[in-house]
Image (cartoon, rainbow, N blue to C red; front, side):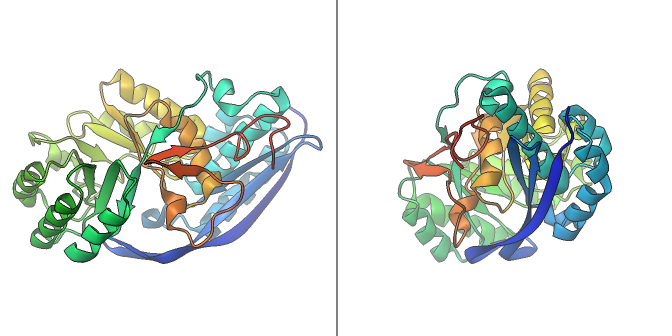
Length: 336
């Protein structure tokens, strides 16, 4: 592979309003955008990092700089998995390599990945934690949404009231909840009983990362998804007997290359597959859209929270997300 030029810049993306989850409130996020070029073709990738692991913009930039010489020498995606640690920095470089390779080959990334032409995906739209009344109103405002996910905080009584209010506001929607590590094992029976009564279809990451063994033997009446507990391919096997679904986020695992491997391994082990996102623009959602073509649950609503997205952008319509070739990975000749 010929020598490459690497450019990495930090950009701040602002949220339209504060977004609250268990233990954290987001008002903005710093993302790192990587551009790789060979003098004729170019590839881009965006990393948002993993806030609960301290994987911020400075950490992402440091990881990229440590690997710069090898990357510019023409490293491949498989080699990158060994060279850089999983995280937002590797995600940005990996996605840039995918787009660059697609441009060189003159084919879109989905074809490079051996997939069928992508279709619009039904995505969840997420409600940040707030009062039951505010969250119910937010659910009504998501009039086109077919799937809604709400953030909980670990306050059992309040969280149940939140879920009940959302369900009353949107009796028609698929509903999932995200505990973001906020609950104790002793609370799960009461929590899941209330979720079943509200026709909730997914409970995501109820316990803290590191407490996964406490889920062994818990016969949940609804599927339980691992998010913070499942970072990379190495974590997938450990999900068996504890989780029913794994939530793959490219910032956690370090890129589309690893994400596709995780999805394949989860399928082999009989686990469901979900694709999620950290705070990011359409440039971050587009690779997730490729992964999402083979997922059971899609949560790619990140740009809907931003004060301003980059252009061209992914499109949201009728509860679906579509990412065209002009956004990312379209192959040579795609619009920029």
